[in-house]
Image (cartoon, rainbow, N blue to C red; front, side, top):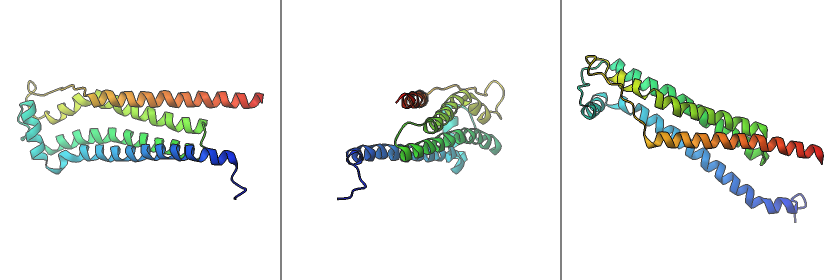
Length: 188
């Protein structure tokens, strides 16, 4: 029997595996989601004329006469917001890296999770706020009465706000709980 493994470590090994499994699942899902969003953002650039035809028929506008810079700037707007999403996922990776290493609450872990949650929340809010600008950029070549400021809020927007809000609350709870734990260590 290995004497370096304490009975406490043996008892906590299944819990550590569960925590590691959840962390790696979050990391993989966050990375897949980030890649999926990037592909979705870049999709109009694969076949711009078909994309503009579909969007134009949905909006009942002729978008085929638009300049290529219009679609490029609209995609660039979404790509700029995507970098906030990427920052959120990177912060999540950093925070969970510290969590895997320490297997406990720490201010460093909660700090990285807070940064990630704020970046994700900023991405979600700015995505909703700038959505009318996207439709305006695509219809900019049309006469002023035909241009659109199309404001849409999708269920996925609300879900993103909810997830980022919950992550933000959990990260603050982790920070406060680690402060309480440090205070309790001082008394013992």
